[in-house]
Length: 389
Image (cartoon, rainbow, N blue to C red; front, side, top):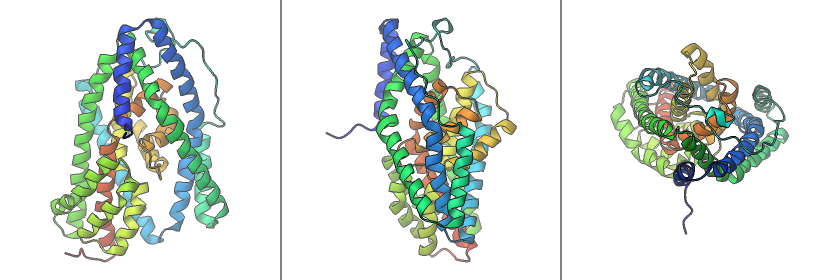
């Protein structure tokens, strides 16, 4: 029997949670709330470890690149993510208020008087260090590995990354549907589920539209700069886009992305360098989704965030998502620390963020990998090459 994918499991979990909250007594919802409390505490413990495990080896790997070409490619990728996040912010803050009532969702209630059912007990799981310390450790180790070009620490960090990858794929991801079921059971019991489902559907449509518009902009810039028809370039990348939707993995889509990028006329050596690199450092689609979803959840909780306050979060996303693992929702897992430390997300808010992000993860991944080809076209031109017709 074919294994059920994560997205179908999350949909099933949401349905079960709604049914539990609508028809079963409070003590049953309390069991779910207790599990959520324990799982949320474990997630808080794991977040700093996830940051170190993802970011440090990801930054360290950039030291193996091709000098100036590496810096140019990384710079274009980072600017692309920054512009995508900014575009998402202004779009979200302009459109979301038309269908989203500020403060209409209480996601941090801790007792029945605040609508949500309280857990029967809690388990304290303090993290080894806080999120900011984790970021500083990750940057220090990653930059150090890149600078000294040593293998010993690099191997250690990659093995630690494998451990964190297993933590996510074997524990967090499998338990996530139960966590989501508990959240929706509690929200249904408190009468909040209609609000969140309405937000889910509308935010989803806006995010997909932003993905497509961003791709058109990226290829218009790349095509104009390289002297090629941007829509022809974009049309050639449709197989990579569809493959990414199916695999939900940038890494798994690399062979198709490479083949289609070369069909666009990019020199083989440039494509072979840029596409695998951008698969780990260029996540414009994920940045759009994370920005839009975080704004929606903050608005639901009555939290106002100006662009000046939001831009540091967008800037940090471009760093923390480096080398996000090839598991569903890898980007949002890497961003959990920023959501908690920079935007003040509570554990229920983080859980909703995961659910909302994973619901469209395949489309974000498709946007990421398709946009990589636009960067390859630009780097090919910067390196003095013309597109081969």
